[in-house]
Structures are given as C-alpha cells and as structure tokens.
Amino acid sequence: MSVPPECFIDISDLGANLKNALKNASLAAQQSEVSFRHGAVLFRRGRIYSSGYNKYRTIRWAWRFSSQSFDDEVRLNNMHAETACMHNVDRNLISGKDIFVVRINPSLLLRQSRPCSSCLSNMKKKDIRRVYYSVSPSTIGLIRL
Image (cartoon, rainbow, N blue to C red; front, side, top):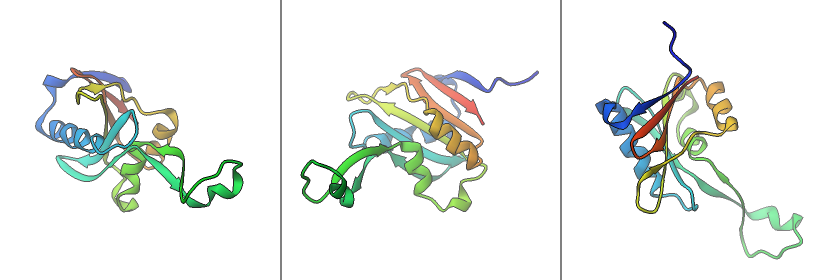
C-alpha cells in the first residue's frame, strides 16, 4: 500500500517528538514581527536543530533605487519561517531532517500554514524528508517530499 504524499493528522494522535516540535514552532511564531505569525523548526527524532520565524528583511541600500525617502532601512519583503529556519543552521545539518511550520493567531491558536510552492521547492532541494504544518487548532498536515 502506498502512502499519499499529503495527508492530515489529528493533533491528539501526535507522538511526543512531534508534540515537542509543534510546541517549539509555536514558540518561534510568537517572535514573529509580521501580522501572519509563522514559526518553524528543523528536527529529527525529537532533537531540534534550528528554529525560525517569518520576519522582514531589512535592506539599507534600497533607498538609492526608490523615489520614496527612507531613513536608515527599508522593509521590502519578508522571509518565510521555514526559510529562516534553514538559514539558522549549518547547511550540512539540513539533509534528511523534517520541518514543522505553524501559524498562530493573536489568541495563540493554530491556523493554516501550508508552505508556499517556492518554500516546498527549496526544502526538496535541501533534502528535507517531511514537512508538517498547522491546518487548524485540531489538525496537522503532512507532506512527504
């Protein structure tokens, strides 16, 4: 029997290692500085290797190319949590690991956080095995890469 590439898991069915990853990804999301607060952890067998959250990228030189006036910095776009998570660890440690991505609302409840196609492509190139993501307060999604 083949396993589907994407499936959904009831949060009450998560084992201890996945619950730990979920908790740490939620803590990372609380540090986010953007309105949709996402957090991510890179993990394997209960060990957390890295965490990250979505944040604005600040670029000091952008004022040269804009008609707007800026002080020191300009916020052009944001870095997704899963990308930040992979940037926060030695690239040799990424291969073969799993990533857990969550989004929280102001009440700290889980919301939909399925990674975008660009992030999924980057994770596949980095040899991430599985991506877990929040769907709702009671459901987790799983994508096998």
